[in-house]
Image (cartoon, rainbow, N blue to C red; front, side, top):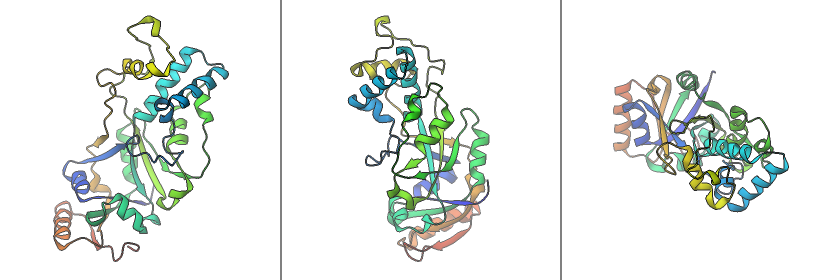
Length: 276
């Protein structure tokens, strides 16, 4: 994997990467775009009664048993609520004013040029389950049929459902790395361990949240907003650092000090918000 991508972030986020030697992956559930049906759509099955009931009905039409439906609910939960992403963009969208404003906190933002080898490093250090790193596809269609395939293929599921956005966001030209956090699950053996045997494979939406809690060892609904790839050695993969054009002299001094400390290439402020 050769080439470069760009990461827009705040000054604090930039400093955190270097001082704590870690990269923050954010839960897709926390920053979903409600108007984008392609952005982590499957969570709606677990959060909307009508969508859940339609899903159960379709599964039964496809010949799924109640047990198989519950297994698929479990898999959907893991792959929607436990997916974390580190998002970057390619060279074209690094020239976008919107990217600075939205992802770099406007006036105190930083733009990092990253070597794509960073993602090979992440994949090497996280083999189980393997991270998925790829460009996002843009379009207004949505492939929901994968939810009803008899054989659940984790990698294919993630590529189809978490690497798609509507055409509106094409300017971002996003390159995304996702990881699956399963450290607090009760294993992927999918053993149903409900306290009341009569509620086993209960497919009523009203009982969904209570039943899901039985799959997780200690946290119930408290899914973390962020998780971190530790020992990231990110400074090794930072090719250059650029500061937002609106930054103050004090902001620039802070960035220069950090670049000097970690021997990073500083390329100055963006001349305008549109051109780097």
